[in-house]
Structure formats: structure tokens, C-alpha cells
Length: 168
Image: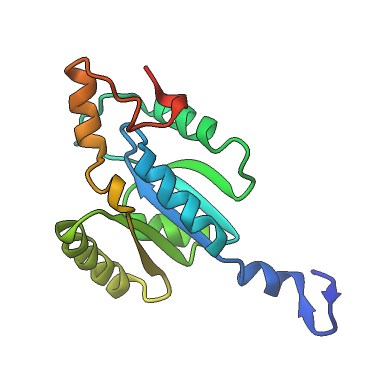
């Protein structure tokens, strides 16, 4: 049994109230936009789990191990950040990890509409998990992993769009 602290509070109670957020995505590859969203979310939470979703129906440019290594390198000095992989529904993964929040980045109105729909569905499945939408900064609103992959495939320079740990 956990020892009481501060009178009636128990360590178990404090652990249950830890603010844990999941930032899910494929991160194929991680971009400076992703890094900015995570950096801005960190002060709001006790722990942020960057969760690399694995979708067997999707074809990735970079393998899972590479994407995970890049993200771990980017956030190596951030004790609040964990990097994990998962399969299945994000809302189920949140419950498994004891996360109370899902973080999503919004670049434009179509992102907002899509994320709003997903947030409503997630809320219907588990009302205890809240989705937090963070607007991208204006200078990063055009950066996406899809566009970065196209630049990479076209042998272009992606140095402005990815963290230095990702430079190929």
C-alpha cells in the first residue's frame, strides 16, 4: 500500500492525477512542425508520449525503427517526453497508457474539421479522454510529412522542414 503523504493524500492518488498526453502520428518523417507542437505542449502536461501509430494498410517511406530513433534523438534531453509505438485505435492506446489527453496539431481549416470529427468520435468512445488542438505557427502551417516525403523523393533539400537529427 502507498504511504500517506500530506495527511490524507496518497501516492496512488497523485499518480492517478498525473496529466499524461499522447501525441499520435506516423511521423514519416517527424517535421519541425511536429517538434513545435510537442515543445509548446510540454508545459501543459506532466508527461507527453509521442506515439508512433503502426497501420499495416499504410506504406511508409521510413521504417518504424528509423522514425522512432529520430524522435528519440530530437527529444533526448526532455525528461517529460517518451517515445512509443502502438497499433489499433488511438483512444484505446490512451486508456492502456493512462493518458487523459490527446494532442493534435492544426495547420488549416481542413485539419480542424477532420480533427474535430475524430475528437467527437473519441469522446463518444471514452469521455474521460480530452483532445487538445494546438494551432501551428503561421510559418509552419504549410509543412507536412507528406510534402516532406515528396521533397525527399524528388531529391530536394528538406533542411528547413525537419529537425537536424533527421537530415538524410
